[in-house]
Length: 589
Image (cartoon, rainbow, N blue to C red):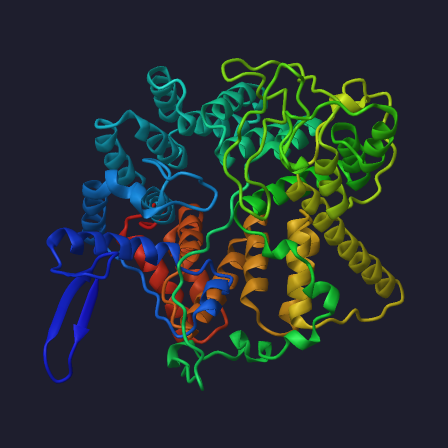
């Protein structure tokens, strides 16, 4: 869609197709433009940490839905175009966009959860469900968010009776059972979900998450190893030319010395090279989720035990070399050219494709987890018994390119994996995750050791603000929230940082400290306004949840009692007024 303005002159609107042909803009084109603009406003909004704002500076971001009338127009447009939503694409974790997994459904769920307008969402999906029962998974998610769990369970039961192999319904049911601490019930559901959609990352990741909750560490690693990994497709942000100079005047209502982060410019040179080289911070999409699962396992069992289990379920370099010397080579026509894509299968079992992967990882993946998928119809609890041979060049290619850290010798008491032929080959991307995790743990250990030594000697442990930010994110990745907050508070003592303040805000939310939550939110809202971002869905959600728990009157009183300029406080009052306009729970008292 193009709008051409000639000064002096006329305004002309038209649309351009994929071939560059100029067409007259129809009413349907304008409807699609309107709906996509709202979806982009939510998708491209800042989370409160300032990361999105810093990517494209000087762009005004505002809330496109500020009243119930605007909401009706938005949901009406979504209903009319819902069954074309798959054409918009989907999040990078989804391989193939479909009716319930695309940018339209993601935007709708984000809007409903942010504003708390669950009744509107239920009405919308109830109407759409009469046209396609697959939409029941979206309706169940809204029911769960609205604390209508009984209705959600009944709906899932009825829908799965009608669509027994719909992976979105099964995944929703498995997530609900696992969240309730019933991993035993979620396990069989997740296995069936994997059978239903073996090429989707989300089904495998859910199964690995359930194994982690059941403390089945070996099966969790095997399942993680079987996940199909996709190349991360970033949002199509506009490419701005490099400006000669930038002038971004400060709005009068955002002027506050406490939230001035001007000192951040040019601070990168003060960051230690080892902190700049941490690769985990760059993980996006499927790789980020897989890494978080791996760090969760490490947090629960420790690095040494993780390496021990890894050596029990995956072929190690020394084992392969020893086996190559003692066992004669057989025909390896079953194997592909890349050992990273092959699980060792028995002669009567062929590899099962897991879906397309990115070029950085692999083009395809075999079903390596015999416990999860023995056949396409049944799920056997026993592990598959693969053959003990594989292409020599393939294994050497995988091992030589990514030498793993030398683990302790395998535990010979573990009967299931002690022999070479019962093991799998670790995917190359998973090997890389282990190496990145090792580096994260090494830097984290050095930091905590140095901090303890300085504390014992009663000396100040000094670092730059950006180094504290990096250390806070490092501790958060490794599931050490207290140490992360310690780093972020140290950063804030040097200068204001939206990333650090967002981390401290999470700590206040976990502790139920309403006053602390509001104090951090006020500062983040003011900082957002300073960079022309008048709307952040995450900050609106924070204010709405606080009003729901404490009541609107108390929240407004706490805001007003904060020792900041009145014009700064008014910015947060606007979020509270928005909750009142939507008649959110607690906004009337």
